[in-house]
Length: 338
Ligand SMILES: [Zn+2]
Image 1: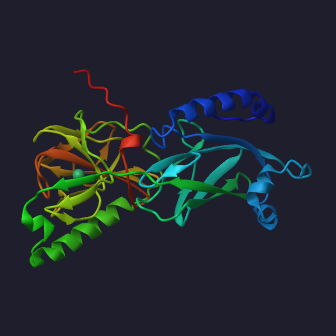
Image 2: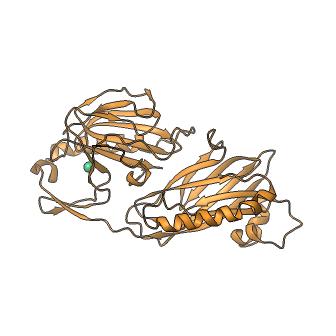
Image 3: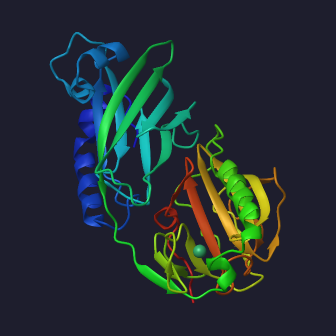
């Protein structure tokens, strides 16, 4: 929702209340679907004034500062966020030229509002198993014609409950032979570089397309025990898929990695812009080249069982500002009609 004039803030209050009610009914269905706290405010004009007031939140809401130049804005963020999830932020204000975000040290610069919605949109990550109870979010608004403004918010973190999953795989994947250590290290570095790419254009929009029509067979965050040995939690979502099934890009973007990895097998990474990336693992074959632009739903490869697997399936990893988060709440709901 975008509010432009001062009066529209008043007109929208009943609508906001309705929105909050609807969203509170959604409960814990997922951070993005429960995205809740729409805020329409009037902020102070200058960053230095906000900073010197001691409380930026208070300053932005203070009704007593009538002598200040006023800038209406809207800010949508969830009331709380789950660990291992991404959350959407939407910020709208007349005359805002650029927005810089800082979520506990993870930084994102947005040079322009979304051409589709006309407001600034971002996905921000909450790391799985973060120990933090609240995340500090800072928004720095760059106004057209000069001047900056800083808003801060404290975002509560809700711990999600993730299941334990016991699996049996080939022994070489639990205790990889020493000669593979260098290959594994190179794979990780390559993956890291691909998923920490932050391109300035926003290609993604929520919800994302499903990469295959199959059901989810293994959830993000599952505590995995391979052959009785506890290993890292599952940093992705597994979908039921047969070898050779086409795998579609969850959204438009640029292919930034096409490679064969020890654990991930044949892997494709698509950069969707503004720090959002998707990775498709264990493919039997590729359908794209590095540097290629893809549209939402384009086939990037074919499902398979390369790398550390128990059988053919698609593993989808989802990264926001380099942090692996659960893709599932961001995806379209299953539309299969079988
Ligand atoms: Zn997986």
